[in-house]
Each structure stands twice: as C-alpha cells, then as structure tokens.
Image (cartoon, rainbow, N blue to C red; front, side):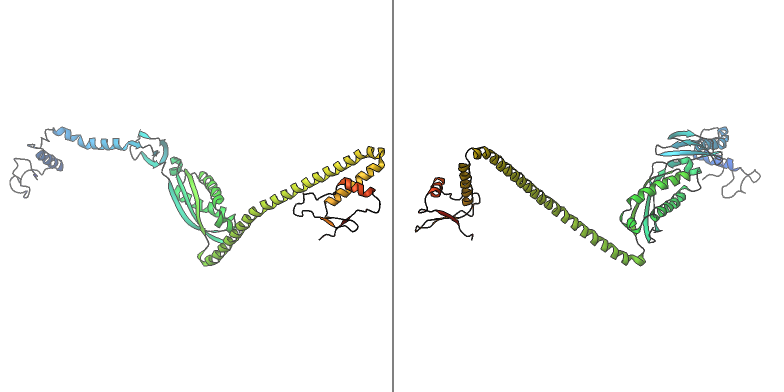
Length: 366
C-alpha cells in the first residue's frame, strides 16, 4: 500500500528520511492518495480521472442519500404502517410506498396485520361448587388497529394475557365442576365474547380469532378421587344408554301389541253390533208372519233353534229298541257345521204318535 504520492522521498516506514522539513499530510490527502494510486492516478489531484472538487461534495452527498433513504417507507400488502412525529401519533400508512420526514423528526413502524398469533396458559380456577380445576387456555389473535396497538395502551400483549385469564376465571366460576370437565364449548364461546369486549375497552387494537379450552383437569392431589368419580359417571352413562336402547325396543313392540288388541276389539264390537242388529231386524220381519200364522211360526222358530243348538253340539239319535246313532262334530274346525237332522224327519217325528218317539239328547261334554 502506498502512503505517499509518487515522487515523494518520504518513506512509509520512516518518516524522517528525505524531506524532513515538509508539513505532514492530512487524512483526506492520504485517502485521496490511496484511492488515486489504486485507480492508476499520478498524484493527489487525480482520483481515477475525477477532479478533486467532486470529492469535496462527498461529505454532503452521503448524508443526503441517507436522509432520502430514511424518508422512504415501504409497506407490504400484509403490513400496516404507523408514523409518529416526535413520539406522538401522526398518521397511518396503507400498503405501498410512502414518504416521511427524516429521523428524528418522524419515525415509522410497520406491523403484520394478517399474522395470527397465539397465547397458551394453564390457570387454576375455582368453580361455582367450590372445586379447584386446572384449565388450559389457548387464544389466537391478530392486530386489527395498529394505532391502538402501539399508542392505545402500554403493552397490548400483556393486557391480552391478563384479560384472558380474568375472563376465563369469571366464566368458569359461574359453572360447576362437572360442566367444566364435561362441556367447555359454551364456556369458551362466552369467554371469547367477553374477552373481545375487554380488549376493545382497553384500546389494545387486537381482535380475537379463537379461544379454546382444550383441557381441564383436577389438581394432582385429588386426581385419584376425580378418576373414581369419572369412572362412576361413565358407568352411569353406559347404563343409561342400555336402558334407553331397551326402551326403544320394548316400547314400539308394546304399542304395536296394544294397537293390535284395539283393532281386534273394535272388530269384535262392530261384528257383535252388526249381528245384534241383524237379529233384531230379522225378528221384526217375523212379526207380521207370526200374526198371520202363530202356530206355524212358533214351530218354525223352534225347529230353527233346535237345528242351531244341534249343529253346535255332539248329537245322539236313538229310538226304542233301536241302535244308537252318534253324529260327532269336527273339534278342530270351529267353523265347520255339524251334521244336522233332516227338518222333514224332525217334523214327522214331532207329529207322530207315542209309539215312535224320537228324542234328541245332548251328550255330556268331554
């Protein structure tokens, strides 16, 4: 490296040899000499073909360039910018290229407004029935208003954490232990709504995108007792399920049987009423015939009655010193009619004299 311009007798290692009476060179001259030597210059007046007067503007050009760069703010599509003037809020910046006054007059900050952040904590909570339970809380949130996030409160993230724990304690404290352990969905929905109201009131500029209570467990000191309770609850649920399944099977069968009996009873009622009405109508039709021929009508009715009775029972026909005639009915076919005696023979036997009696006796039922 050359410390002196060409033609100088001063050595870089020994400054006393040669021109002792010359004035020491300034740092700028040395810099120019070095840059001139590296660029093939021949003296302090040459800087790679550049005149020395241009180098005089270098101390001014560098700060100007730095000021221009510090006055330009680039905000991406996912970001939002905030400009503060002497530490106070000035304006917000949308995505794009913006200009501001140089630092320290104005300063700009950019925040990612689309990034979802999360916070997880496990907090002990006292339930409504005076039981302590460890509740795990998970919150997802993002920046909604950069101005409020930076200037609305001292630390929005810390406010979010404290507000979350306070809201969860409040909502869990209004419910029993069984509700907290078994159904935490409704508690999480109410906690999210109240948490958002608290964040808006504290001017944090944050919006809650999700709040979950993924786990809730009793303290380790009483965990065995809670395990026994959970086992008993599971056994209860299993028995209730079995009972409901049995109910779902038996009740429809009973209802079907009841409907069948009602239908049969209704049919029997209608058939009985129809038979009675038919008998009454037939009797009414016999009244004129009875008035015209009483004896013949009585005999006809008696014969019909005898024929009906005989058709429903086993009949034995016998005479004096005559073989007995047994006429059995078919017991396996209730609808089958038994053998009936000839009506003419019965009339002839009735009108005959006592020397040829015919009697019909009803045999004893087996």
